[in-house]
Length: 265
Image (cartoon, rainbow, N blue to C red; front, side, top):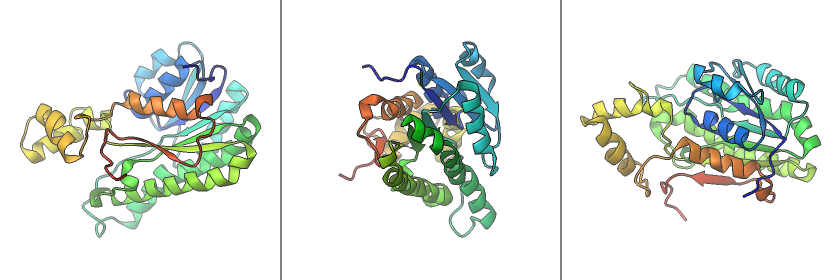
């Protein structure tokens, strides 16, 4: 399938962890001939292979700081001369004990990282995206509509991300900019799979081995019809479709990549 992406320029936020959704998205964009600027607080050494050809640039930058998303946009346009795609992927997934123990500081930290970084990057990018008739993709989550008390602030701001997606599509669609959300279900990123990550923590809590937790407990807990967690590359594939010319009429909506976990029609 020809996606019509060759020669375009993208920004991906929060893709610094090798194996994560942002990293997979950068890889897929590069493979389609897109030049990419990726910004994150930490960029892992595994990115060296992607940056060899000169079409992927990375910068270590704290995008929760007010002026920094705009700086990332400026760097991308300065380096590559234009901007066609913004992928707002940055996010953290803090685990809470519940609403009453989640402090103002907790809420504001998650707000700054998971939501305001999107707002600020989009605001800075939109003049360029209007000029190029470009696309914004916001990474949301199935938890926006099926929230967990242990992730109360994360879920709330993912719901806000969906709302922002709808609102921006209405305002900027007439100016040629599409805005789409991609909502992953439980995805096997390094945060889950690394030693001491969520799989290991859950295995201890359930008193089972790691393999049982991954292949049996987690699919059952989350109602994963496909019998496994989603792969980060499958999320990246949805992002690529969303930004491609094959999705020219897709805007103001979300693409669910959830392994069948969302059962409502």
